[in-house]
Image 1 (cartoon, rainbow, N blue to C red):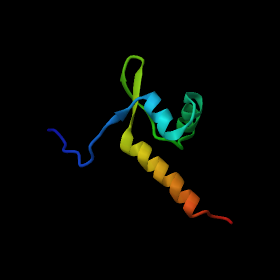
Image 2 (cartoon, rainbow, N blue to C red):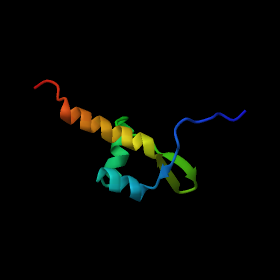
Image 3 (cartoon, helix red, strand yellow):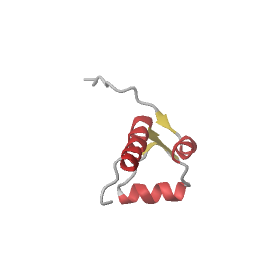
Length: 72
């Protein structure tokens, strides 16, 4: 049975993710390994992508942290 998704899912390439977050691929990989960045999806041999809405949510979280600093 197919599941209906309420979010339009779009995969972003590594280049597109780099344009969104301004990090080099090595730093993105470190953040992923630390569990502080959305995980990539393997879509084929040597090909990965990230869900656009997860990247946007990650950026929104960074904005929220900026606007609502804690411990200051």
